[in-house]
Length: 225
Length: 303
Image (cartoon, rainbow over all chains, first blue to last red; front, top):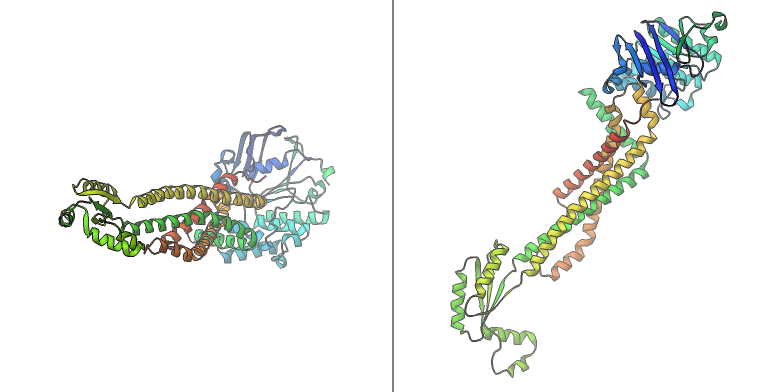
């Protein structure tokens, strides 16, 4: 489903964030990207969402090299993804409902369908009763769950998440990860960047470890567990 | 198509709601646009009224043809027929020297002094009225033709000041055109800058929209509608300024026009002016927004 083929990403002034990286993620797989800060996890996810383009190499999505995708095609590509961020990137002036509805409005669904899907997504993350609340009135965990609801509301085939539990306490982090596990159970491909090794021990999935922009051996299971 | 229309309707009403939520800032921006649109529109109205007045005075561009002092009255009457036969002449009237003196005596208050005169110093005078649609060149040619007649001492044309007025109006028309162009550019800059600030203040929102798959058109549309609303509000305010100005100036202008013995009616705001002002507002508002959006929106990308 997703294949990195000898991908290098170089930023002006800071050197190479990714070096000659090659790996593959199959459809329906749950993959955790691990590694220390600055290892290249976020850059890798940005290449999938086309927030950045690789300096060299190919990023194949469903067999198509998206690295050279025309700018006008990027919105359509992004609509195939669900993206979750550490800082959740919610619109503070809009209600929970409106935040979750945003991708559906962009996709052009009718109001009834939007309402049905938004409520279903909010129900899945346990926030149906807070659909009218604005993000400022929600806890950090609740805000992150709204971000997840927004990512899954379009029923994407792939969800990418960049440190989704970075701001949460261990109990909430586990809850969020279990939520991702449930989406993976219904066939959604998951690619989650995290440095929280304690969590990984409680979840299944494959681990890809990055070190200085290169693939490295996954952490010792003893360290993880 | 239905979805497209619905998105437009949502953006259209949503942008108006956004503007209503910050009434003071909206009113100030619309007022600046309104004043900028009202200035060329009022100048244009002034020029149109000037043209109207000049047109009404065109009817009065008669020649006064003074005959030589030794011209007999019978000869003067012959001249009346001769001149009436000329091309471009509508009507000729004769004021005899005696009639002119009697009239002068009655109107000047110098009756006793004039009684002392041995001879009548005034000549016979012909009043020549040209046809209505005569051109300036034909008018000049007719004047020269009259001056070449044997019995004619002097031909006086009173239309020079009307020609000067027309020349001035032509100049003013160009000033209006230039001022309109400059002010429309000003409105484009004002709206463009307002939208630019709006884009900057909503930077985070734009990033999120692009991240979840919004196209450039989807992100651009609300800003274009904001520019459109600014233009419409500015146009309406400009019309209000023009109406108020017309109302305030109508009475003194009528008095002024009356002093020049003109029967011309003052022209107010017509549908064409209303249309131009509104179209100017809409186009400059939308154009200014488009300029800002094209320049600044593409620079904002998710990070």
